[in-house]
Image (cartoon, rainbow, N blue to C red; front, side, top):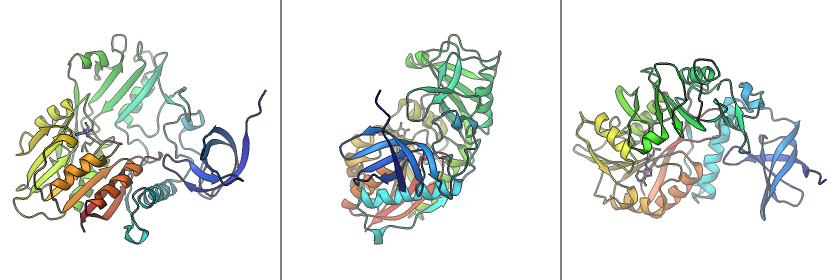
Length: 406
Ligand SMILES: C[S@@+](CC[C@H](N)C(=O)[O-])C[C@H]1O[C@@H](n2cnc3c(N)ncnc32)[C@H](O)[C@@H]1O
C-alpha cells in the first residue's frame, strides 16, 4: 500500500480561499488547508501540480499566536462552511486585508506606492446569515465537508440567523423534515420574520413549521413566484426565490453606507448607473432625490422585484446584461457584479459612460484586482478600498472600491 506523502512545513503567507502558503525544500509553493501563516505543520499532500501542490494539516507542531479552537462544534465534525474559525476574528480580518492587498499588487499590477490603505468595517460574527444553502441527506440538512464533496449533517450553524437556526434544528424533529430533497435553500427576513424554503428537486414530501413559505425548484422552473420581505436602510424589499439579496441585512446596510460615502457629492440633476442592480438595493438608497438613476440587471426575477421595490422612485430599470447594454454619459457608475467580476467587456461599457467616479462592489479579491487593472488601463485610478467584513469565520472577502479618473 502506498504511504500518504507528508511534509513538515513552515507557513509564511495566506492565499485567497484561506489556505496558508508554504514552500517545500525544492522551493515549490504548497497551499495548506487548515493552517495559518507562521505555523510549523505536518502536512498531508493531497494534490500535486506542475508549479505547486496542495495539502492539509495533519498536526500543528508550532501554532500561530492567533490560532484558537473553533467556536462551532460542526467545524470539528468536518463542516466546510466556515474555513477561518481557527483564527481570532481580528486575525481573520487582517488575513483578508492581506489577501486583497496582495491580489491588487500581483494581479492588478497596482504599484505598492499607489495602493491605498484598506479600511475595514466589522460586523457581528455569529447569527448573521439570512440565506443558507444546505445539502440534504436522509431528510436532514448539512453542508459540504472541508476539501471534499462529502456532506456533514449539522445540528445547527453558528453563523446562521436564529430564524434559520430554528429550521436547521427543527429539521431533525418530528414536525419538520426535508424528505424527498437533495438540497434546500433557507431564506429569512430578519426584520419581518418571513421564512422561505426553496427545495430541490421538489417540495412534495417536505414538512416545515406552518409559517414557512415553501416552493420547489420544479415549480420555480414552471414560473411559480414566491418571496419574502426584508427591511434595510429604511425601505422594505421584496426578495423572490430567484433573486439575489445580500446574505445579511446589517451587511446590506453597511454596503449602502460605504457606497453612498464613495459616491460623494454629485452635481444637481446628475445621472447615475447602478449596474448589476439586483432587487434595487443601491438604486433605492444611495442617491440624492434629484439624481436620475438607471439600474441595469439581467435576472428576470430580480427585475420584477426591483419594479415593486422602487415603484415610488423615478428609477429607470433596464433588463439587460451589462456587457451588451448601451451606455450614456454619467456622473457616477456603481457596479456590483457577481463573483466573476466585471471583465473586459463590462469595463469597456463603464468607460464609455465617461463617469468621473466608479464605485465597484466586489465579492472576490482576484476579480477585484483584475478589474482594477482593467479600469487602470481605461484611466481610472484606485482611490479607496474598504473591506466590509460580511462573512466573518469564512475567507470570503467583500470590498467597496472607489475609482476616479486619473
Ligand atoms: C452581487 S449581486 C448584486 C445585487 C445588488 N447590487 C445588491 O446589492 O443586492 C449581482 C447581480 O448581478 C446580476 N448579474 C449577473 N451577471 C450579470 C450581467 N452580466 N449583467 C447584468 N446583471 C448581472 C445578478 O442577477 C445579481 O442580481
